[in-house]
Image 1 (tube, rainbow, N blue to C red):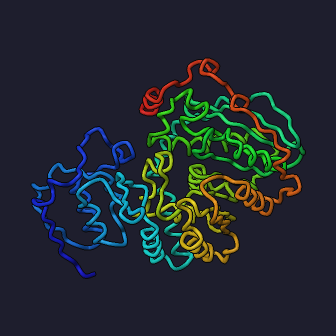
Image 2: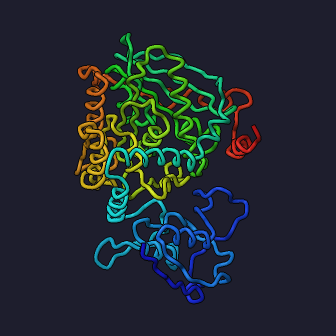
Length: 465
């Protein structure tokens, strides 16, 4: 490899850099500490990645810390990496129209579609066969778990959790039953189970929700859960961290923390464990996951963590250039996996199982038909299974789970799980109020000894096992 020498003149540039302050208590690089790293470590990594030598005076960079360090690295371009590392401020600009520019804070989780295209091209150069891809796939999955921090959480989770169920409410062709499940000691996740009234073996679809108003109580979500239940699937919705009844335990602010990302993943894993143990009507060969926006991102994460899923339908969520703007999606920086990745590559680890990708022209997923979907088809092609991944794109729609998008999801699960399409009828769905969909309804009704603050939860997690 040709070795380049890049001379870095820090004595001129350093005063204008947007360096963070070193915090000796920050042991994990995450959203809270702005993914800060010592500059010297970043420069050494750049030397190793690109096979170059960076000449600088050690005294010039001693003690200097770089915020969002890993996200400034472009694994496919040395010059873009250096430009990002040595940019003079933590702001960026974008042209909106002639003579109008918007100034934004640095967004570590957002890049441009052009950046995504270059990243996918670079990634494609790492594997040209199923064998090479499966080596990469294994590293991606293990590194994702490490960066997410899920295994320490699983180690602290409750092996024999307490669970509570509300009264079953019967509607036209389906029932709704609220539940609460202990996940970590004295910490509960609440949700609702939508089940068919028809007896038999049913498919199971986990339904993570996004950040739309009222989250899982939103009518667009209720229609989806209930319509699929009428068609023959048991559908399970559950709260986001700090939303719904979780807000009663941890407070609204808990959602805006890096902890929300692994905690929501933990909830998804533990709920699936519990449902499969509790219900005898689930066909374990037909387990799906479907969420939109942040719920779509969580759907991607759950497929990475759990091999039990057999079909997935993430909607309006992943691309190669957007990691998710909420800490519950990007707070642990999991796209750093395997030396640099993106959610489009992470979701490709689901191949060759059936997947529907729902996208639209009114948000960041506008690039899916021309960028991410062809990439996924290539990965599925390694298995001779291009037909197993499909894209339902709605160029004239915006970031909402509209009737047309829901119908695409229905058609997908009707096909892959053999559901009854004639019964998948939203006009027969009864919408419920948030109060009806809550298990406890107020803090006073939670079990005695329940965790009731984020600080208490963090203390619990820090305690030795």
